[in-house]
Length: 262
Image (cartoon, rainbow, N blue to C red; front, side):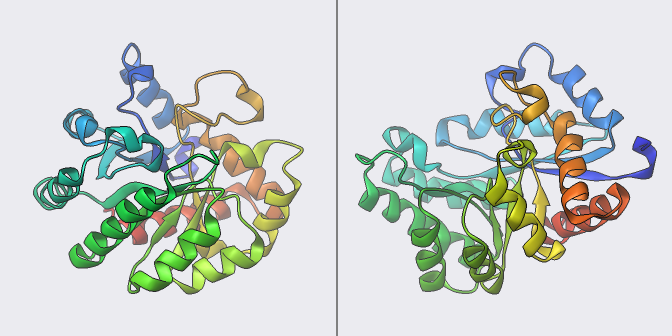
């Protein structure tokens, strides 16, 4: 398939991370070569928001980079309550396309679940107030995320790197939330994800890399990057028994609607 026949959006990356400092321009050129027109860059700590803004602003050609700002649950030691107030100011002043990355991470049994919930609920309330979509991290915490979303009400967004059940995906869709699928779906042993891909509506799926993290099967052990999104596209196309062009068109339209991209 030729890149000029598809348009792809990488709906979740961290391209502001130091992993890309030495070759960010070349990395973006590789992304463009496979048809990526837009890349969403999610924030994780207040300290990194200025750098994220500057990296996104530096993209003056395709692929365009779109900034989001949030307080990630894996970085709780870096967060202060004052950052929640600052977040609202950043989201409005910097024209963010979403609030994120926020959410819950209960992978570590010793995680500060109540403090995570405090920050998550405050960020959901802020997203509702500003009428922004939310990018959510939900590791070992999908059910808790669903409960928080129900309590918050009137939100939309995406649970990225989704690893929950088909039933949880359906509940999220009823709540207005997409699921992001990336490198993990390309592994042969990801049977649960493969069943999920076949079961959910195409309108719910967003493609993502989570670069520099979570590389797919073909790049195991290496830094992930947006150009590898083509592998995710190929896997979902095979699982759905649809042409890659069809899956690309549908998932790109999903991302454009959710994030309000041109």
